[in-house]
Length: 373
Image (cartoon, rainbow, N blue to C red; front, side):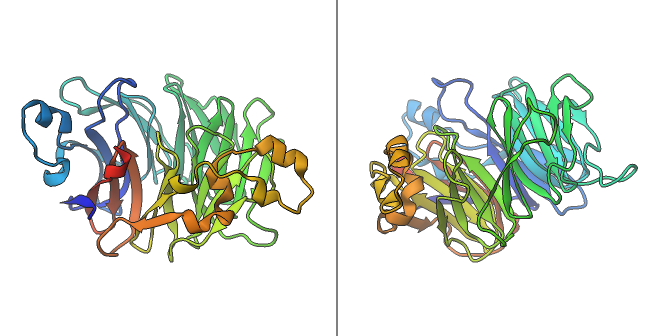
């Protein structure tokens, strides 16, 4: 039985994010942040969960999740919190439906947040109007990229009031998610159902690589995450609830397309240290754990069998198991992590063996996954 706790927070939760460890030798994080939406006064909050290490040091044997997360700080936020990403151990970036981005810094001892910089009304449908900023992605602790309903991308640098670079009409519709693939490469997914890669060294908006699920179909893609060890492997979730895994090196079309949720998939995330495990959450109220560890050593050759692509087989070799899901589906273990479906599950994040999710039922779940300890 999965061990979990439920915290009622009196706000619809749009995003939850674990605070990163200070360094690789630090113990697992016990601090996370959340953002709300669809409220008269939205907010960004900081929470602390029970510290497993300190209880063990004190000779106590209480399970981690017998204790609800405790709110230790809250700050008002203008507009809905549309995205939230940590840039470093201390810096948290937050985007808004009011069109802007703000960066907050954790204060020593108190763990509270103070704003260190902001960019207001970055996204605009037209001069004098605003467009929601829908997504952000950090590049270490110095750069951010933002995407919006206006289809624009803004590259931001801490300490600079104006964007370093603006790619106007990077897409003709809403950019729903964005991530840095490499230092100078940005990947987006959009409501047109396309995945695009932009090289920031080129003239803005020129020469973008475009990937589509299939010709003639334009089901919106809503979320994306890249494999923590292989940047050419990314997973996306769609409005139709489908999970798609892409190999950005070889194929124009996705390598794997799997039926998943019955509603829109709001977030997809690889485990940061054990990427054979993947997690998704949905508008249908479900939260799933995809366990691909059983086929982690399976070769890719069966995928190319009969296609006359021996050179590609040789190049790809054993690659990521997520690229061979269609030939290994019998080994893919999918588990539902919530006891009952309810209102939409909007966001998830995982740190070591503890998974968080935030919902429209004004709750934050903390879920312990022992197999990942």
